[in-house]
Image (tube, rainbow, N blue to C red):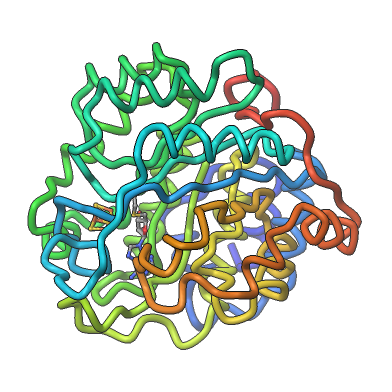
Length: 350
Ligand code: SAH
Ligand code: SF4
């Protein structure tokens, strides 16, 4: 099949082979517009024109892990560390709810200061009498902890597998285990969460085959939410590599992921919009994405949540107001989703 035929087959619901995905990711592939158009149509057909907002609160930048690409890694002594108290986290989440957001994402480094019980308490306080979805992004924990948090009311969990290349995974994560990562994702699914995974693109050592495996994994594991963004070099980390020269490749990955996974939630991740927030979001939303994650971390902590450089920008503070986001949606002929905007898979739709 030529690339045009592959795109058509994908749009008609066929599951691609690994080599077909590789063909569409190959630098020689020259039908990008057809791919983007098909992805946008698939997005409209399966998840509609709503853009869902997920307000993120980065409540602690302490991390016990040492992922070689990340500025929060424990060996980075140049970072000024902070923790929000459980009360402050709840207070901020309630503020976010009162601003009109119906999903709050609580994210941090892997920080055992927040015990399973403390986090459970935070979740149930946030949920008390409020129609708000709580998404957690706190890294790897035992199955019984995921269960406890689910029982406390947590709805969703984000844990990217980062790359499906097992050898590369081991190099990038000196203190994490590839199988354990997938154990966590399985446990989360079995515990009733809507599960988010994802990857970085442009890590030194990734191959077109490994990206193809990533996309096939999303589909096979019925992942509900998929975060994909470029790796951004951070000089406070030991990784060597400059990342991607431009974002075209990530747009292609997103478009393909939409075409293959159909009804998933795909955010325009912050890392994808770092160069030009507004334009970046417009582009990603027009090639398959349907979610924006505005940053609602209290201002005084933002600069210290330095996973990669320039993450906290002044533009973000302005562009992340609900008015600006509604304008952005309208300029694309779309609208901001009401309610919690849960998984279409879970609802049995599409
Ligand atoms: N500790 C949790 C959540 C915080 S890290 C966890 O690891 O799951 C959130 C995400 O930041 C990671 O999944 C990773 O994909 C991304 N990240 C880390 N370093 C990055 C970098 N240098 N460039 C782009 N994204 C990065
Ligand atoms: Fe910690 Fe997550 Fe960064 Fe790894 S990616 S060092 S677990 S914050």
